[in-house]
Amino acid sequence: MAGPLVYFGRGRRIDVYNFTAADLPPTEMAAGQARLHRFGGAGIPGRGMTVAQHAFNLSHVVGDCPDRQRAALIHDAPEMFTGEVPRPIKSVCPDFVAVDDRIMLRLGEVFGVPAWAFEAIKEADTRIASDERLFMFDDLDPEDEQRCRERQLGITITPVTETVAANAWLRRFYQLFGEPTHV
Image (tube, rainbow, N blue to C red):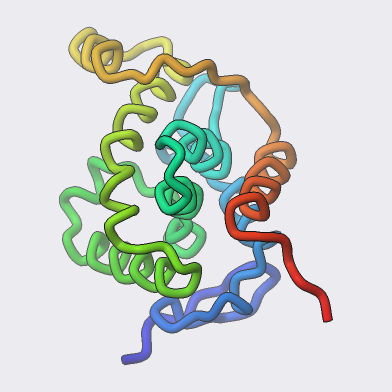
């Protein structure tokens, strides 16, 4: 079944249910995720975080299993097509979640990441979001702040530019998936 056609990278339209690795050059994946900001772009100026930086950080805290590390690095790649939608909004949009899941399944097929690996990183993804909220926001309500403090991983977050986030994500991609081959 054909999926929705969306613009990607420099303006190519791709079928988000049937793309190939050639449709997703790592440089464009890195740039696409670095242009997206966590929590729908909310946060204190100068303390924002891109999706690329989030995925890079997560790939370093999920343990030594290469499949988990790879899953962590690309787990938010569907957002290159949909934008960064905060989790509370996703949770009330089952059709959106179904599209996201379908894209994630395809990413796993294309890049050789087993479905179980995406499931295995969910707890770490939730916990690292607590670290990110504590870093990005000064005005959390007391209950949310307490919940974040209980769940956080305790990582140090440093603000970086979109360019730095994209470059870090790209280096990590090549480290985990291999360097590109040129014919």
